[in-house]
Amino acid sequence: MQRKIVDLSYPLAPSTPPFPGDSPVEIEVRTSIPADIPPGTPGHMNTSNLRTSLHSGTHMDAFFHFYRDGATIDQIPLAQCIGPALLLDLSTKLPKEEITADDLLPHRQAISRTPKVILNTGWAQNWGNEQYFTAYPPLTGDAACYLVECGIELVGIDTPSVDYSPNDAHFILLGNEVLIVENLTNLEQIGQPHFQFVALPLRIIGRDGSPVRAIAISEET
Image (cartoon, rainbow, N blue to C red):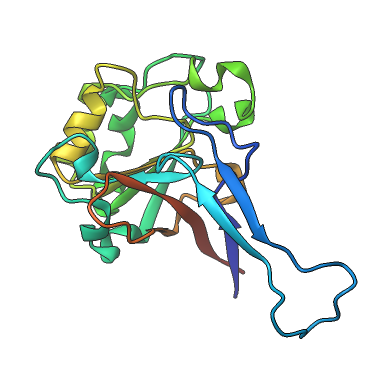
């Protein structure tokens, strides 16, 4: 069998659309190797500075994001960021159509056996469009409660947020120490419901989230 790896992350670049109200991605070139300098020349290198919201692109929400006393992103157990995942196809959802507990109920047995659930709403096809941040399908509070009852530890989704204000799903999931990974992409490339999910945050001390490089790992015969 061969191992298949699918990159589920958006690139970080000045062109990366920020969540409305967040700072855009800025990459400042500090030093650059001149074109006429041969490789290995001492004292010449490429270096850059990065400035961005911690919730730009594909990212993880720490419990501290909505809870003052919640664990910050550097305190998240890495084991909670890696492991078996279940991919649920919800790609028939229309713009702003809610994801409810009834949508998840048929998958209860599979959800209860898998610690991580990844929701494919098909919304990634709208990346870069104006409606991407304004019309995505949200997770309802009852759906979030259902996932908590099933014992999951991480929810991933291909939308910019799991919900809209007043953020019921955020409060329920993060309040029950369920990690949230948002802005996933390429979920249709995974090709099977069960796979290994990896999304490691940067070790940013005391803060609310981090960009991640999310990947899916599966076996192909």
